[in-house]
Every structure is written in structure tokens, then in C-alpha cells.
Figure 1 (cartoon, rainbow, N blue to C red):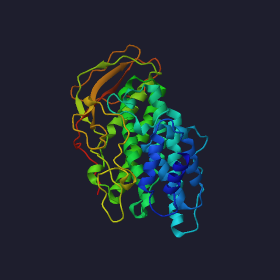
Figure 2 (figure 1 turned 120 degrees about the vertical axis):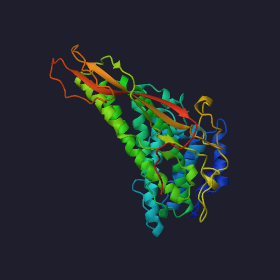
Figure 3 (figure 1 turned 60 degrees about the horizontal axis):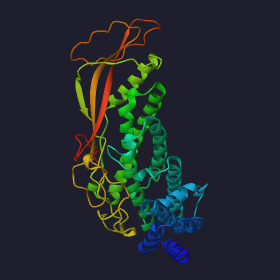
Figure 4 (figure 1 turned 90 degrees about the vertical axis):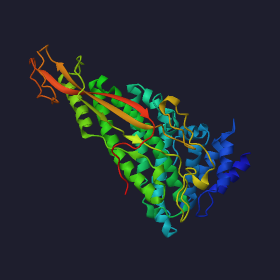
Length: 412
């Protein structure tokens, strides 16, 4: 069995400038998915190929490893994560051919992403792209401390993915096209988990202490920046040939939400991190904030001169393999699931706005004018008998069947 798996690994990483052959990938998947099969030997063979001086061999080795990470038994990525180091290709450069200069750039970026994917598994003991999603999923039920430790790990991995930064004109051969499709697939899964973690963070924001609020606000602001970068990444995917219906819709978040989070943090700093009880009045506003919805089924690989079709994410690289996610809870979505994957339904945020009064030194509350939204007052001096009036946002989230949000980022 060892010789046959070595043969398949070598067959997948030949010096022919074409994507790894499906038959070799299928053989490797069969090997690592069999019970009690050691993956160390296979990892060693592929790692050795990744140390070649040829950009073709190295790139194919990375694509093969990524493919096995995504579709293979968890023991494979588990083993990669246990290694002291995975790839050291930050200085890789193939000067032997003209194409080598351009492809070497993407090899360096791609290897960094696979390193981060492996490191993330080591840090949180799971592949974040394969965890259960939805209302009762891992990111939605994680406690605040775990969430504040996990989200930065996701952010780092997401940054490495988006840093691949290829434009359609640079996706000129089957190898880099295969890598891009694998990255596109990971981007949807990773952002889905990322988005659900942010929803959880906002659900609990007003119950956090000051230091937790500071960290959460920083994470949320960074999330918005990464969402904008993902929009550009998805635009490249569409120009590359991924069908528009397979690309998620990203909705814009009102700027007032950030202001409300900052406002609450400022109130905690004024109160020296002592949480005072809120006096809630009737809600005067209700906003729908759909951040991430998608009707993604799957994405086929782009063949030379062909349109990408929704058959599977790896095209000729893979057969009809599933994404590997845990099943979506039936109560989370009522729409029938597409052939391969549906990242739950549209995520709807219900932002219930309440007028809140937090009183310092038991002072008399300032009366509210009906219909007016109060704004923060200036910081009171020490021992002052004044009230701080600000707006508290009670965030509730729910999953609805997939539909287009009211406001959509348009890809033109």
C-alpha cells in the first residue's frame, strides 16, 4: 500500500504544466480515508515534492495537499498541524522559465495560506471551514472568552487567503486555476463561520466588561474591512467565470451600528467598568441587517476557454464530493438544500433600538422627548450628579430562507 500511495503522489505532482490528474487524487483520498492508514508517509512524499526547484511541481504539490485537507479524513490535516513547520517557501523563486516568476509569487502566497490553515487547526483543534454552522452551530454557541480567542485566528487565516490576490488575467493555467477554486471554496466556508462568530459577539456585546468590549469592537471593525476585501475577491471569481448565482450577496451594515458599539464602550469607561442596570423604554426603531446570505450550491473548475458550471467546487479535480460540513439543523432553514452545500439561509439581524438611561450617583434621570433619539452627553466630572443618556442596541439574530437582502453589493 505504501508503494501505491507513493506512486499516486508522484503522479499527482509531475512536471507537466497541468492540474493534478483526478485519478491520482482519487487514489490519495481513498488511501487517507481508509481506517488506520498512516498519513505520515504521504505527507512526507508531498512535502518533499514541495521542495522542488520547479514551480510546476511545487504548485501541484500544494494543490494536492490543499485538496486532501479539504476532502480527506481529518487525520491528514491533524498530522500536518502536528509538524513543527509545514512549508518554508517564502523565498521560493523559479528563474528557469518566464512563467516561473509570476507563478512563484502565487506559490509563496498559497503556501502561507496552507501554513495558516494548518496552524489554525493546531490552535483551535478543528478545521474552522468544516464546523457545524447555523443557530446551534459552534460559532453561535461559543462563550465569550472562547470567541475572543477564536475570531483572531480566523482573521489571520482569512487574511492569508485574501492575500492570494490574483486577477483573472493571471489565472492562466490549470494549476493556478485549481488553487483558486480551492481558495474560493474555503473563502465561503471560512467567512460563513467568521460571520456567525461576529453575530455571536454582537449578541453578547452589551453584557461584556470593558476590556472585552474593547477587544470585540476592534474585531468587529477589522471584520468590516475584511468583508470589503472579500467583495473584491468574489468579483475576481465572477470575472474568472464562476456563475453569479454561486457567489454570495454581501450587504452593507449601517454606520450607526459602529457608533452604538463605541457609545456603549464609552459609557463603561465613564462608569469605571461597573455595569449599571438599564431602564428600557419602548423600541423606536427596527433595522434589518442582512450581512451574509448566499445561494451557493457548488462551483466547477474553470477549464481553458470554458464557463465555470455548478457541478462541483474542484471541477475535474474531484468527483461529486461533499464539502464536509456538518448537516444544517432543520430548524435553521426551510428551503430545500442544493445538491452539495448551502451555508444555511440568509442571516437576518434584528436590531432593536432602545433608549437607555444609566444613572451615576443615583441622580434624577433626564426626561426624554418622545420621538427623539438621545445622544451621549459629555463626560460628567467626578461625583457629579448627572445622567448619561445613550442608545442601547439589543441584537437578535435568526436564520430565514434564502432571499436577496434589501441592500446588496453589486458586482459589475
